[in-house]
Length: 220
Ligand SMILES: [Zn+2]
Ligand SMILES: [Zn+2]
Image 1 (cartoon, rainbow, N blue to C red):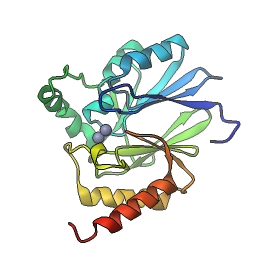
Image 2 (image 1 turned 180 degrees about the vertical axis):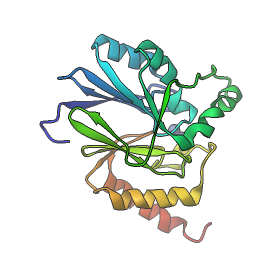
Image 3 (image 1 turned 45 degrees about the vertical axis):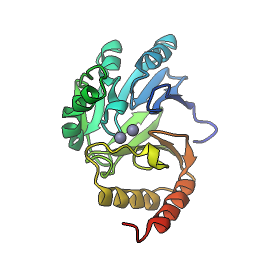
Image 4 (image 1 turned 90 degrees about the vertical axis):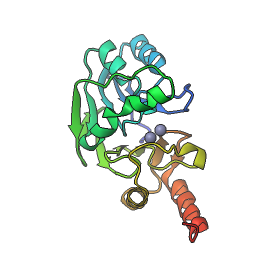
């Protein structure tokens, strides 16, 4: 992101799963864009309300419970904000409460209304485009969102076994293909904001996954 960019990124991850919700803020315009509002919804709401920001949209990298737990609440609190997800996530979303029940968590309300985005769908924010890139593998409708030199990847590029939840919708071969595609499509200098863990340069992740690949060769 250029020095002149008025957009800042705020991270909410004080939840049990250390799931990162990102709020992009254009403070000059008073606009906010929310990516993956999970269980920190009260903190996220307070942040937005305190600054009197208007929420442009809520984007979903995918619809596993920890990433969408707060979406419907945010829509309620901020006047029916639109929620964008890939159509191939609908089946994952439909089953979301199988997991909240198993984990004895409160039931998650499905976001409404929902708007379907596709690969290369663009959304205007702060005089730039946020571009959706469809990358199936972690879930069928998983998306990464590119904004200037930032890339929000959800759970597509998580480091460490502990961060790779065995949740429904995963397809290992497809995920590998999507990861390779991410590394070839975007410059290594892009800053990746993952669904869990700290922000890191795409080149560093590329090195990590290349190493992982060679060290596990022959084991599977
Ligand atoms: Zn996930
Ligand atoms: Zn996750």
